[in-house]
Length: 125
Image (cartoon, rainbow, N blue to C red; front, side):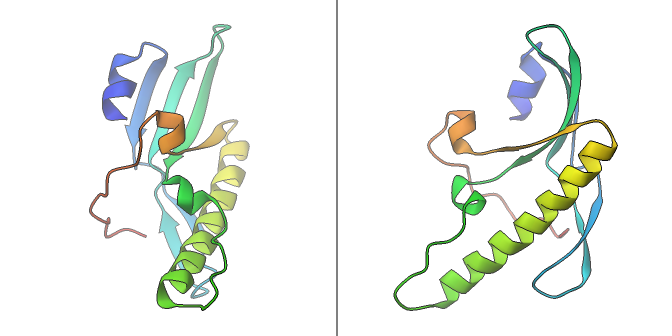
């Protein structure tokens, strides 16, 4: 994504993980800090300049987990991840709207790749 943002003249400016949005986790009830993947400024096909907050996630994390025949640790983890992501994105939408920006979630499908690479987990939550 970094290469695309640098090489595509549509994107005028961008930064990575510089925005901090507080949210209350539905899992532990505590305030955490959400660092969206990108903030970008881009030019639309009509020439309009827009700004957006962007998150990149595996498609599987953007849909509600399917209930298995037997609940297991993996399913419970997926449910917790989904719930936390939903709250993060809710707060990001509110923040973006207040700042006259869009909030966009991109998946491997949007990026035209078969899957997102597994990255080291950031110490920030």
